[in-house]
Image (cartoon, rainbow, N blue to C red):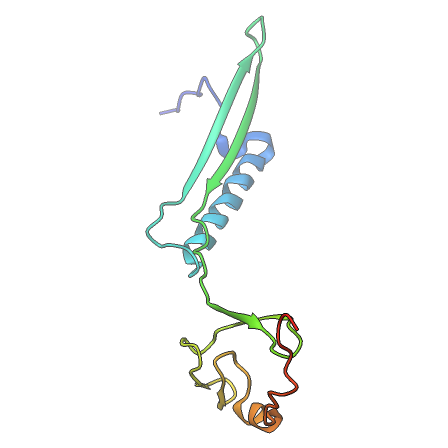
Length: 144
């Protein structure tokens, strides 16, 4: 039995020489990449929307057709950290460094280079070498 010819021969995969399908494939790749990204919330839904817009001419014998492919991805998760800040007692300049140990003043063991570090990530051995006694008589006092 011979199959009847379709009256409307529009295949979305073949529109504009396959360009629509290429856009869908590209958006699908973005979605799957976003799902696999550990910096996104796995609970958030991702969306892929294909919008076909048909605008016929006055004689209704041609239709200007546009296709928009849009993906909605899960945003990256926020990143939080703690920054220690203060003023240099000698110069008065503002200083700031990221707290790496978890608690201000606490040292920690860095597994990357197997050394003991200060709360801001400086090597303890180097800090102890550089530290000299503080001469409070030479220290700048604000307002003087």
